[in-house]
Image 1 (cartoon, rainbow, N blue to C red):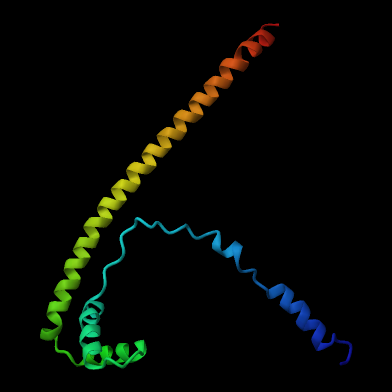
Image 2 (image 1 turned 135 degrees about the vertical axis):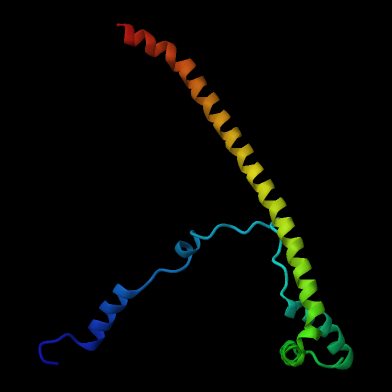
Length: 146
């Protein structure tokens, strides 16, 4: 330790400089989730898993492990040929098309809602400004004339 700081001193100083504040500050940037927004559609694998879970539970009624069902489903999916996967892919594409339609409707409603809110706010602010001008305007005009 020739003329240098102790390791403990440098660690404390370095930690203070490198620390990143997490928590409320990090969450402020995220917008709140809209409960009315449509859910994303499942992929072909998840469509397959919906059916696979039912059949797996019938064959293995005592199995409570979610991981075991997922692992067995993944192995089964990998062993399927493209022809066997085709019905699940078609169902997934149909759900995706339905999702896109519902998202278009949702986005239109969202845009209409924002337009209506903006109009209400602008009307409010105009009326409030006009009310204030009417009340204060007569007094100011008299002062300007002097």
